[in-house]
Length: 247
Image (cartoon, rainbow, N blue to C red):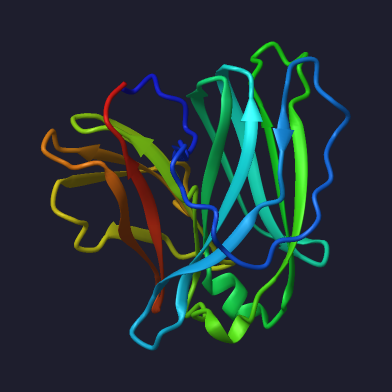
């Protein structure tokens, strides 16, 4: 498993419902040499906290791709500033699929901005000749319905895809100007998960987390809380793990 590339494997679901809210326009690159289509994404708030505020924003992006090892990048931004970005790769059968991307909703809650843009890029050709397809969707949200970020900004390559009995990698960084070391730890991960953290560089402002999944784990989406401490300051985030049946 150590040969795995340090990327986030996102969950591709052919059965995700299409209901949602706040869809917008879609723009794409010139047609690729193989068949791609990308429709407008749907967004929705998920995982309300104890006050009823959404902790995450889920983007459901319908695409049609040729079969192959596909790579994609999704981001959300307000104005011209990218607030968060996710990269991933997976083998996708030819045809229609829905890419589900989970963003930290606290970015929206803290921004107080209602107008946002999702941009997705997906390609399924490792040669680099096939340009794939790029699409944008404008959407509107109410920041007051989302949780606000408290403490240090902790950034995770937020989703990984794995199967029971396997492991996967995620990179986690903290954004701080402090020269003090950053201490990362997983806080009460769900039963069936083991997480090991190793520094990426010195001083350690980023780490690599190896997530191992027990053989008994059921397929589903899980949220693993991670905390960073820098001096007297702390921050939290969730590493999202999609467990699927081994292919």
